[in-house]
Image (cartoon, rainbow, N blue to C red; front, side):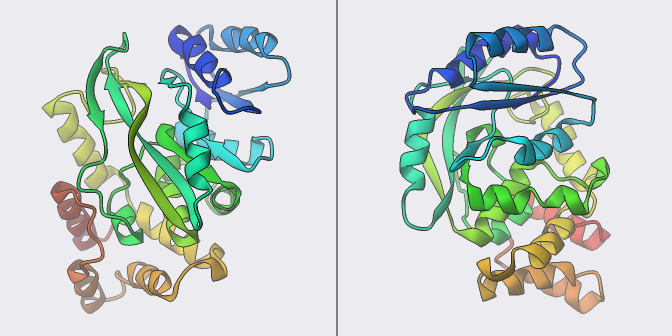
Length: 296
């Protein structure tokens, strides 16, 4: 968990993690330079659950780098999960996740989630409609929030190498997008229709959903004009570090992506490749716009 000025709802979330039905759950928290009482709350929780919570007080480096740095800080385990600071997990979230991860070939589990207001009143259920599985889909638009993910050691190990090559904050993708892409070249992703957490959405939330048309337009504009070369860097990273874990088809897809800017023919080939489709029309259109602008 990465925290930042989250004292108001933090205790409720941490308790929901500590009281999971799955035994042996431990929590590593990196605070990203909070100015409120977040660290004080974390120290109280650390004392309440001795030996199960580790608190790291860090400087402000932004949520992307903070979350990715936690991949190297977390206590060694069989499975890992990201957590937001203000959600509430249903008691069986982790036990259900681990049970599904024990399927042959599965390396990433994603639960559906309840979208709520600040008081945890349910507003809608997100089951990722029209999701298309596959690496091409993820590289157009990652559909899965980090708070819904549980993944194995293979995914953690691969994703943790990204910061070694790209320590500059401006070059770092979101933690959930990187995890999704790494999982695609390692094994299968299991998407569960069961909602297993209550996900608070505020007007100032980093995530973009559920806050009206104006915010949605701003989020989509940021996808096109603010996120430059993100997918290129992920593709280049996977080609360099995923090694023998990926299929020939995935390697060919990634090679096509990193080569698109070489000439007009390569760019047209990427634009017409039907494997690059996320199940969201607006995301697919934005991908084509970014390719033509040369910042995909």
